[in-house]
Image 1 (tube, rainbow, N blue to C red):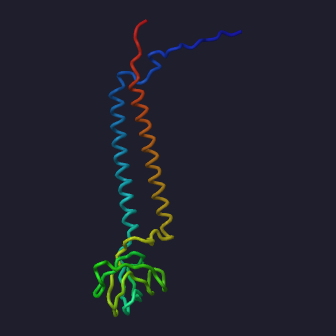
Image 2 (cartoon, rainbow, N blue to C red):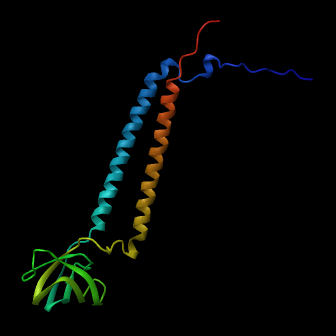
Image 3 (cartoon, one colour):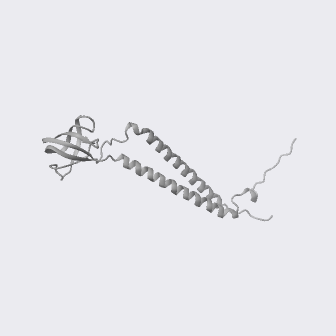
Length: 185
């Protein structure tokens, strides 16, 4: 029968890592990776800022006519769509409290048609501005899906890299706290 080799119960000094001389190298690695994480975080912030900008629709404009009720008929809608909770401003529109769009009664979604406002108005062909303030946002549009998917994939890859780097930092910190092995017999 063969000889059974018994493994040592304690590791030899060569089995432990890092050795005391590795501390400067570890510090350099951590600093380089911290720089990388900072750059990746800046990229994520830029993506999020861009998304926030795209998610906020610009104010729409239209010409409105109403007859003393909360219903208003809009024509020549531009920069739309007009969304619920948009604040309505223009000559003859009360400002206190602000008049908002409650719903659309008829017409093209977010475009020309009849809407319900939060207050009665009497207007004849008045230029109006509709500033979004909530409600169902018109973004993203169906054609944005490929762009959004690409951005999401890039953000996910960056987050995964950051998570892996943070785990490596933690491992390095835990390992570097391992006491040096005793020397001598």
